[in-house]
Length: 175
Image 1 (cartoon, helix red, strand yellow):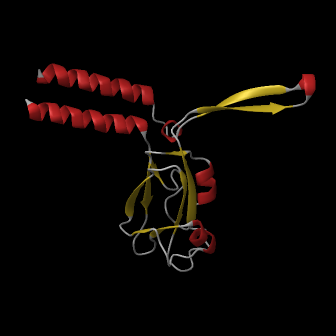
Image 2: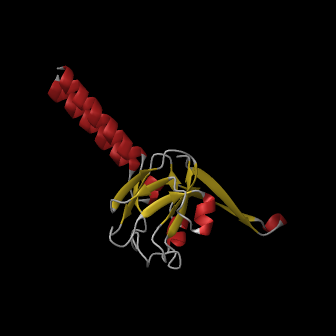
Image 3: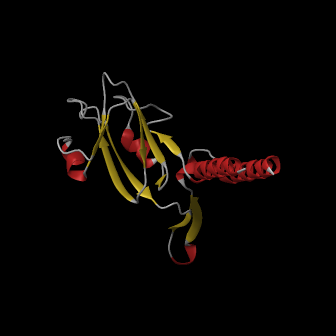
């Protein structure tokens, strides 16, 4: 009986993790970790939050991924890396708030722009108020900014309901 409960708890935690985070493939949908993708534009369109995962997909014969500090990013210098990724399918957890910097350490790829910086933020969903005009002619509108899981197209409430249904079914089957 204890093993069944442990399995149910493990599955529940995995489902909750999926609801609360997003797995983001670098450069998708327009590309991957390659010489053609504009990573600055890609990063501007994506919101990165704690708990998300970053996935780099590339050919190991042509590229690699090096995490560096801002100085290394600006100078495109991989001589003092924070981490090196060499598997062609590297998953990087975004576990803390702050800026992260990644470059391709292959010589010559700087010219092609193979670097990306991401600003990891909290999971909070917030509203931004944008106003135009002055005085009585001031017109404002509010815009809700969502977490990366929502911008990735994941319906968190549906996933939560599915997870709860799974837990309920598991409880009925196990007991």
